[in-house]
Every structure is written in C-alpha cells, then in structure tokens.
Amino acid sequence: MNRTGGRGARRPAVITILATAMVLAAACGGTTPGQPRTVGDVAGLPVTHFESGLRPQAPKPDVTVRDATGSEEDRIAIAAIADVSDYWTERLPADFRQEFEPVSSLLSYDPTGEEIEVCGGTTADAAMNAFYCPPEDLVAWDREMLLPLLRERFGPMAIVTVLGHEFGHAIQYRLGPKAGVDEATTTIVKEQQADCFTGSYFRWMAEDRSRYFVVSTSDGLNQVLASLFFIRDEAGQSAKDQGAHGTAFDRTYAFQLGFEQGATKCASIDQADVDARITEEAFDAGDSGGGDARINEEMMQLVQQSLDEAFAGAGVEAPEIVDDGGSCPNGPDTAPASYCPDTNTVNIDLEALAQLGQPVDRDAEFEGNESAGGLGDFAAFAEVASRYTQGIQHGVGASLDNANAGLRTACLVGAWAGAVNGEGNTLRLSPGDLDEAIAELLRPRSLIAADVNGHPVANGFARVEALRQGYLDGSEPCTRQYG
Image (cartoon, rainbow, N blue to C red; front, side, top):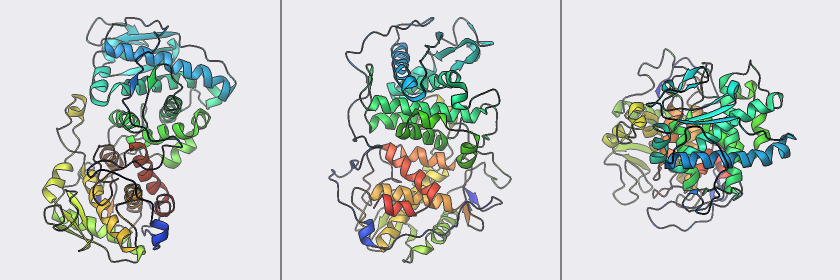
C-alpha cells in the first residue's frame, strides 16, 4: 500500500452504511469460543466438513500416462485425469452440444531426471510446472517437485485443481469459436476461462457426482482456493504480459464464477470482461517501496485517516486506533488488533502487525517454508480495518457477535479497499495488496472475516466472495446481503 498517487478514480471514496439495526441484525449461529462459525451456504450447497481427497473405493482409472510411477502424487493425478474426463464427457454435450474427445497424450515427468522432448522443449525446462500443449494435445505434470509441494502444503485437492485447470485449456481448444478462443486471444483471457472451468468441475464434484473424489465445501474448497493463491502471478506483473495468469484475486474470482454459474458462463469470458475487472497491473512510479510500506506509527495514522475518510458517510463516531497491546482490557482479545466496544477503540499490537506485514517471501513459499516472511503490508492493514469497521457497525446498531458479522466485516474491508483507489484519498492500493488480503482470508483464524470475538466464517469461499463483493460493488451489498 502507498500514499496516494496518480491513479484514476474507481468510485467515490465515501462509504455509506444503512444506519438501521433491523437491516444489520441477524440470527446468531452456535459456536465454541475460538472456533469458526458456520453460516449460510456455498453457492447454494450446504457447508460440509469432512476430509477431502480420493474416495476409499474409487475405481482404477482406465488412463494411459507416459512415464507414470506408483507415487501418491501420480496416483492422485491419474485419478484427476479420469475424473475431469468424466466431467467433460457429461457437460460438453449438455452445455455445448458437442461430444468430448479425450486428450491424446498424458505425461508424468521428473525435471531432474532423463530429459524428454515435449512441446518444442524438454522436461528439464519445465520444473515446478504443469501444462497443456495444444500442438500435441498433451497434458503434462512435474511429479517430482510441483505435485509433492502442492500435496504437502494444501492437500490432495491442490493436485486436482492444477490438472483441472490444464484440462480447461484442452476444452478451450475443443470448443474453439464457442469459447471465443483463437490465435489472437490473450493469455489472460485463456487463463481466466481455464480457472473458471476448474470451478465448474469442482461444483460437480461438490455435488457428489465424482466417482473418484470427495470435496467438502469448507476446508476442502479452502485448500483449493489456497492453491490458486500459491500459483498466482508475482505482484507487479501486468495482465497484458505474455504468460500472465492473474493475481490470486483474479484467479479465485474466475474459479468462483465457474463454481456458481457453470461452464457456459466460463466460455463467455472475453477480453472486454477481463479488461473491466482484472486487477493485475504493473507497479507505477508512485510505488516507491515495491508495494510494501513500513508499518509504523506514522503509517497507522495514515490508515486511520484513510478509514475516517472512507466511512465518514456512516454518520457515527469513528473508532480510534491505539497501540496498547492488541487486546481490550475488559473485552475482546483478537490480537494483534481488537475492537473494544466500551471505549470505541481499535487496540493494536504494532510490533506484531509489523511482523505480519513483512513482504511475502516467494522463494520461501516455493520451498514450502510458510514461516519465512509475512503476508504483506495490506494483510496487516486489512486486519486493522476489519476491527475499525466493527466500530462503525457498532455505531449503527449492528450485532457484532452473530453468524453474519464476519462476512459483513470482510465485505466492508473490501469496500474500503475499493474506495481508497479514488482520487484525493490518503492511501491507495498497490499491485499485490488484494492478494495479501486473500492470503489472510484463507488462514484458519482469519481476522478479516471474523466477528468481534475472533470467530471466523468456516468456509473460505464465502470469506473471499464477501471481500470481493465489497471491493467491486461498494458497501451497499454489505448491509443488504450480509445483514
């Protein structure tokens, strides 16, 4: 995040909140202190809790894969190929009146082993990768480095996510004009479509139609979204670059679009749609710190000013941000930031927030070291903003400890993020900031999507969707949809 610079206005910087307790009130959901709350549904499906992965009695896939081994990674990958083929065998005729033709070739490879010529190069050049090669109609994956890392960090469904995405590219080339894909189609459009197709496939799986896998709509989909975050583009890459795949914010959007609206919606994604909403952009001259600001007293004063500006339209007394340990002496303890209703303050632990706000270490991520570095400055600022917005909600008479409080809070944080991009505001977003918020949202103990006592919403799908809705549509849906 940076001080305001020369970016054009996105929307008015004043957020209004309906000052009506009846609109904001909601029925409480039961929860044990410290545990996530279950609320609502996941795009019309119930919130489910069970271990996601291969079914114990899954059939043996009738799939031929070159150089496959007996590793657990290859076993999951081959089942994923068979499964996503089942999905498209069903959906291509139903959605596009076209029969599914199986992919011609499948390859499992070790990039450190014997080199194999593939798609104009060799497997030695394709470490930490999975890809679809149109000229060869081939899907290939790195079984030695990429797949083990994905399974270790995010669980088996991360492997299924990556291969579902690559099959999405194969479907694009089968659909051709029906998906608007030709030689001139930009990479980012193809990638958004493929992520969307992956979401439609996971909806089918979540509806218990798969012979091979089961996925819960809580932890299971959380792992899927986290794996999409992991394979995001670097902050500062432009969507216009050849090879751009999108930010985590963009990729999770496309996945959720497919999950909610199906494959035909995915095929309608085109350049105009992408240009209207994509967040991936290069750093500009005002991003002196490469997108990361130092979290200190001066910066927190700017955050206070930015929040005050954004929520001035609520017509209530704004909470004051104070550095006094991060918990309320006679109230909630959600350190490193807590909203204290009795004093209308946001009590922060500045040192802990500075640690959380350390820049993301991408090298450490790919080495599987989650403890190195932090989540980035905006993850820390968004946690503070989440407690601040609870002060605003408290001021208009909303309950802060019910089932919808976490989603409403995440939505209002998103509305603040959207508002600060307008002209004349104290702060503005930098490339990568929204991804830092996504990273925080997908943590089991997310504070951005938690009620006043720190109980987060159980399903990350709903957390991310609430933040995005606020960012794209402003504060109005936060009171209407998450009341």
